[in-house]
Length: 157
Image 1: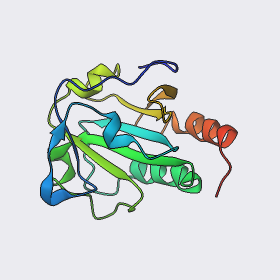
Image 2: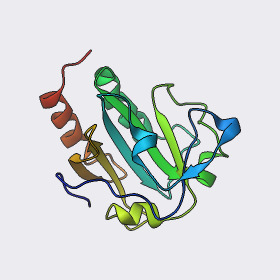
Image 3: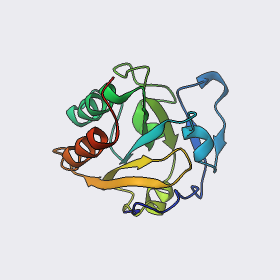
Image 4: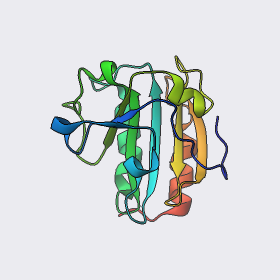
Protein backbone atom coordinates (compact mmCIF):
# COMPACT_ATOMS: atom_id res chain seq x y z
CA UNK A 1 0.00 0.00 0.00
CA UNK A 2 1.20 3.50 -0.72
CA UNK A 3 3.13 4.84 2.27
CA UNK A 4 2.86 8.14 4.16
CA UNK A 5 5.14 10.76 2.65
CA UNK A 6 4.57 9.60 -0.93
CA UNK A 7 2.68 11.72 -3.44
CA UNK A 8 -0.55 10.15 -4.67
CA UNK A 9 -0.14 8.74 -8.16
CA UNK A 10 -2.19 9.72 -11.14
CA UNK A 11 -4.32 6.82 -12.37
CA UNK A 12 -3.36 5.20 -15.70
CA UNK A 13 -6.99 5.23 -16.86
CA UNK A 14 -9.81 7.77 -16.37
CA UNK A 15 -11.53 8.35 -13.03
CA UNK A 16 -14.99 9.92 -13.02
CA UNK A 17 -16.48 12.18 -10.37
CA UNK A 18 -20.06 11.00 -9.81
CA UNK A 19 -20.93 13.60 -7.21
CA UNK A 20 -20.66 17.07 -8.71
CA UNK A 21 -22.37 17.02 -12.09
CA UNK A 22 -23.54 13.55 -13.09
CA UNK A 23 -25.17 14.81 -16.30
CA UNK A 24 -21.76 15.89 -17.62
CA UNK A 25 -19.41 13.13 -16.49
CA UNK A 26 -15.98 13.18 -18.04
CA UNK A 27 -13.04 11.16 -16.87
CA UNK A 28 -9.58 12.38 -16.00
CA UNK A 29 -6.25 10.74 -15.31
CA UNK A 30 -5.37 13.47 -12.81
CA UNK A 31 -6.76 12.48 -9.43
CA UNK A 32 -5.88 15.54 -7.31
CA UNK A 33 -8.26 17.97 -9.07
CA UNK A 34 -11.13 15.62 -8.18
CA UNK A 35 -10.10 15.52 -4.52
CA UNK A 36 -8.94 19.06 -3.79
CA UNK A 37 -11.06 21.09 -1.41
CA UNK A 38 -9.15 24.19 -0.29
CA UNK A 39 -7.28 23.35 2.89
CA UNK A 40 -9.05 20.09 3.75
CA UNK A 41 -7.41 16.69 3.89
CA UNK A 42 -9.09 13.98 1.81
CA UNK A 43 -9.97 10.61 3.31
CA UNK A 44 -10.05 8.29 0.30
CA UNK A 45 -11.57 4.82 0.69
CA UNK A 46 -10.50 2.52 -2.16
CA UNK A 47 -13.11 -0.21 -2.52
CA UNK A 48 -11.73 -2.09 -5.47
CA UNK A 49 -14.36 -4.38 -6.93
CA UNK A 50 -16.81 -4.18 -4.00
CA UNK A 51 -20.43 -3.13 -4.54
CA UNK A 52 -21.29 0.34 -3.28
CA UNK A 53 -24.90 0.82 -4.39
CA UNK A 54 -26.28 -0.72 -1.17
CA UNK A 55 -25.53 0.53 2.36
CA UNK A 56 -23.03 -2.13 3.39
CA UNK A 57 -21.92 -1.82 7.06
CA UNK A 58 -18.32 -1.06 6.07
CA UNK A 59 -19.44 1.92 3.98
CA UNK A 60 -21.55 3.23 6.84
CA UNK A 61 -18.63 2.75 9.21
CA UNK A 62 -16.39 4.81 6.91
CA UNK A 63 -18.98 7.59 6.78
CA UNK A 64 -19.45 7.61 10.56
CA UNK A 65 -15.69 7.91 11.18
CA UNK A 66 -15.40 10.89 8.82
CA UNK A 67 -18.57 12.75 9.86
CA UNK A 68 -17.24 14.37 13.08
CA UNK A 69 -14.31 15.84 11.12
CA UNK A 70 -16.13 17.29 8.10
CA UNK A 71 -14.84 20.78 8.84
CA UNK A 72 -11.31 19.44 8.24
CA UNK A 73 -11.67 16.43 5.92
CA UNK A 74 -13.38 15.55 2.70
CA UNK A 75 -14.44 11.87 2.54
CA UNK A 76 -14.27 10.18 -0.86
CA UNK A 77 -14.96 6.66 -2.10
CA UNK A 78 -13.39 5.20 -5.23
CA UNK A 79 -15.05 2.13 -6.74
CA UNK A 80 -15.89 0.61 -10.11
CA UNK A 81 -18.60 2.59 -11.86
CA UNK A 82 -20.58 -0.53 -12.65
CA UNK A 83 -20.56 -1.53 -8.94
CA UNK A 84 -22.34 1.72 -8.03
CA UNK A 85 -25.58 0.80 -9.73
CA UNK A 86 -24.85 3.17 -12.59
CA UNK A 87 -22.98 6.43 -12.87
CA UNK A 88 -24.65 8.10 -9.93
CA UNK A 89 -24.25 8.73 -6.24
CA UNK A 90 -25.82 5.86 -4.26
CA UNK A 91 -29.17 6.60 -2.58
CA UNK A 92 -27.87 5.75 0.92
CA UNK A 93 -24.97 8.18 0.72
CA UNK A 94 -24.47 11.42 2.58
CA UNK A 95 -24.04 14.52 0.44
CA UNK A 96 -20.67 15.00 2.13
CA UNK A 97 -19.06 11.97 0.46
CA UNK A 98 -17.46 12.43 -2.95
CA UNK A 99 -17.97 9.37 -5.15
CA UNK A 100 -15.41 8.51 -7.80
CA UNK A 101 -15.74 5.72 -10.32
CA UNK A 102 -13.31 3.89 -12.55
CA UNK A 103 -13.74 1.04 -14.98
CA UNK A 104 -10.47 -0.77 -14.32
CA UNK A 105 -8.38 -2.21 -11.51
CA UNK A 106 -5.30 -0.27 -12.63
CA UNK A 107 -6.11 2.66 -10.36
CA UNK A 108 -6.07 0.58 -7.17
CA UNK A 109 -2.91 -1.18 -8.33
CA UNK A 110 -1.14 2.21 -8.52
CA UNK A 111 -1.92 2.55 -4.78
CA UNK A 112 -0.47 -0.89 -4.02
CA UNK A 113 -3.73 -2.86 -3.84
CA UNK A 114 -4.49 -5.97 -5.89
CA UNK A 115 -7.49 -4.45 -7.70
CA UNK A 116 -9.85 -7.18 -6.52
CA UNK A 117 -10.44 -7.96 -2.85
CA UNK A 118 -8.00 -5.47 -1.33
CA UNK A 119 -9.47 -2.34 0.21
CA UNK A 120 -7.58 0.57 1.69
CA UNK A 121 -8.00 3.99 3.20
CA UNK A 122 -5.67 6.91 2.59
CA UNK A 123 -5.57 10.37 4.16
CA UNK A 124 -4.24 12.79 1.57
CA UNK A 125 -2.91 16.20 2.60
CA UNK A 126 -4.02 19.25 0.60
CA UNK A 127 -0.63 19.25 -1.18
CA UNK A 128 -1.24 15.73 -2.56
CA UNK A 129 1.02 13.79 -0.22
CA UNK A 130 -0.13 10.81 1.83
CA UNK A 131 -0.43 11.49 5.57
CA UNK A 132 -1.83 8.06 6.53
CA UNK A 133 -2.61 4.76 4.81
CA UNK A 134 -3.97 1.42 5.93
CA UNK A 135 -5.39 -1.72 4.44
CA UNK A 136 -9.02 -2.32 5.40
CA UNK A 137 -10.63 -5.74 5.60
CA UNK A 138 -14.32 -6.70 5.32
CA UNK A 139 -14.74 -6.34 9.11
CA UNK A 140 -13.40 -2.80 9.11
CA UNK A 141 -9.91 -3.59 10.37
CA UNK A 142 -7.90 -0.48 9.55
CA UNK A 143 -10.67 1.94 10.50
CA UNK A 144 -9.62 1.96 14.16
CA UNK A 145 -6.21 3.24 13.10
CA UNK A 146 -7.87 5.80 10.82
CA UNK A 147 -10.10 7.01 13.65
CA UNK A 148 -7.11 7.32 15.99
CA UNK A 149 -5.14 9.23 13.34
CA UNK A 150 -7.98 11.68 12.67
CA UNK A 151 -8.57 12.28 16.38
CA UNK A 152 -4.89 13.16 16.88
CA UNK A 153 -4.81 15.55 13.92
CA UNK A 154 -8.23 17.24 14.01
CA UNK A 155 -10.83 18.49 16.45
CA UNK A 156 -14.35 17.10 16.13
CA UNK A 157 -16.74 19.72 14.82
